[in-house]
Each structure stands twice: as structure tokens, then as C-alpha cells.
Image (cartoon, rainbow, N blue to C red; front, side):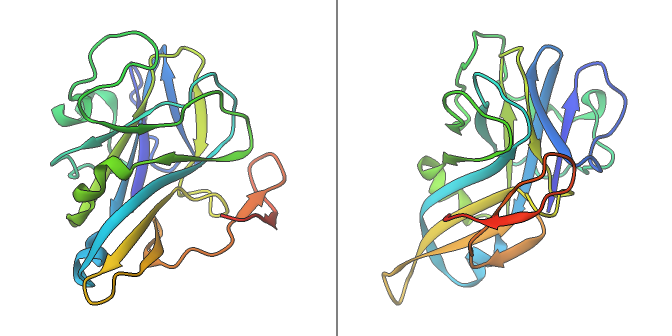
Length: 206
């Protein structure tokens, strides 16, 4: 339902950008908020979760993913570094590249190639998806930053993919929660093939 990034020293909101950015210098922190209320409404137990982002630049490290508790009250078109709530910077610290905080639930490990889909496993945080909204923070201490497609890029929208068990039937089924749709069964999602900024799809196996 929302995504943006904040950059240290910048006064420009980035909520309308087709990109979200992650960098160590100058610091850029990306935020993605998903509406997970539908999981509560249908009464399921989440058993596995993944974050899927499309990279638009290469980097040695795609960033760590932190789950921010009680940090969902931000507006993508208003948020900048200086007006961001304290919780957005919670437990960031100043540490070496690839440092993981107490909020960390996953990462895009290894080198990231441009114009590829990247999947990070978030299964360690499955209990946290029983809330109505989830905010994920992507950050890195690496100075060689990366760009991912935001929800404004309609052919490469960020996805939260969850696998769940229904209480009446223990069959694991996938559901894709994207910032433009609350509960949509995942289908074959296209790789963008043209480089910038609009993509033509070809099918891949998700």
C-alpha cells in the first residue's frame, strides 16, 4: 500500500518515484508497507514468507530487511529524513557492511545483478504477519548502493509472498500481497525485458 525511501540530507519526498534506493553513503533507507489484514480475515497461519524485489542496478550486497514494529503511520508522499518517526531509524546503529540488527528478518544476500528479480526469505518473522499492516525497512552500510522498482513501476511491483495453512484444512497455499493488491493468488510474474523505465513482460516461474 506504500513504499518510498529517505535520503540523509535530502528534503525531497520520494513516494512518487518509480524506484526505491538503498545505500550506505549518503545513507538511503527504503520502506515498504503491506496491508496484511486479509490474512487475519480468512483466519490462517502463515508458515513461510518471502519479499520479492526487482533490481535496477548492481551491488555487492542488496541490503538487510528489518521488520519495524508499530511503525506504520507514515505517508509516502510526505516522508523525508528529517520528519521521519524515530521508529524508522530504530536500531540502525553504525556498524560494518552487512551488519544485522535485532529487527533483521532477512536479507538479499550476495551480489545483486541489474534487471533481475531477487527473493529474500522472511520465514523467521511469520508470526508478525498476523497484524493488519507490516512495514519493512531495507538498508545497507555498503557505499555501492542499489535501486529496486517501486510500486509506481506497474510491471515490477514489490511483492510479499506468504504461504499459509487454513485452520480447517492444513494445506499450504501461496498468496501474493503487493502494494497495489491486498490478497492476490500469485501467477507467473513477468521479467521486465526493456531496461528503463517501462518493461515488456516475458514469463518466468515464480
